[in-house]
Length: 122
Length: 107
Image (cartoon, rainbow over all chains, first blue to last red; front, side):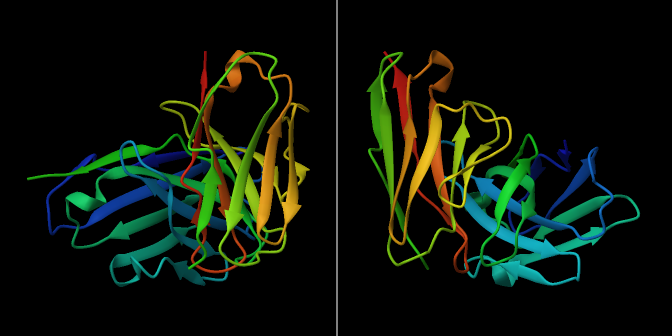
C-alpha cells in the first residue's frame, strides 16, 4: 500500500509563494506511469481539487487557481510538488497530496497523505 | 463546473441504524462518482469508486448506487466508528468537484 507525506513550511506570508512537496513510499511508488493530485481543505470547510499531474508531464489545474498554481515531479526522488503564488489568507488550508487511478475524466483519488496545515499570515 | 449537492448536511444516528446519504449532480456524470469518509483530523479515505464499486478493505456494510445525476451511499448496521463526514467526488469533467459533505454524529 502506498504512503504519502506532505512537507514544507507551515507558515507563509501574504503575497509570497506556498511550496509543498509530497513524498511517495511503498507499494508501486516507483511506477513510472504515475498520476498524482493535490487537494485542499480550509479549516472547518469542504474539499477543493487544486490540480493533477500526469507522468507525461501533462498538468490539469482548477480554473479558480490556474493562474497561481504550478505542479511538477521529480521521479528520481519519488516526489511531486505544488507551488501556489501570491497567497492570501483565503489560501489557509490543510493541503493533501494523493495518488490517482484512472484518467483525468474518470479517475479518483485512492491514497492520500496525512495533510499539512499551511497558514497564510504576516 | 459541476455542482454536487449532498443531503442531509447533518444526521444524528444510532448504532445498527441504516443510513442513506444522497449526492446529486448538476448535470449527468455517468458513473464517475466516488465516495470518501473523513474522520476528525484525518485525511479522507476512499470507500466507493465509480458509484458502486467497493474499494479494497472497505467493510461490506458500505455500498453505493446510482448513475447520471443521482447517487446514494448506504451504510447498513451502522457502527460507532462510522461517525464521520462523508464526501462525494465527481471526475466526469474538469474541474473535479466535491460535495459539501454529510456529517454523521453518533447519539
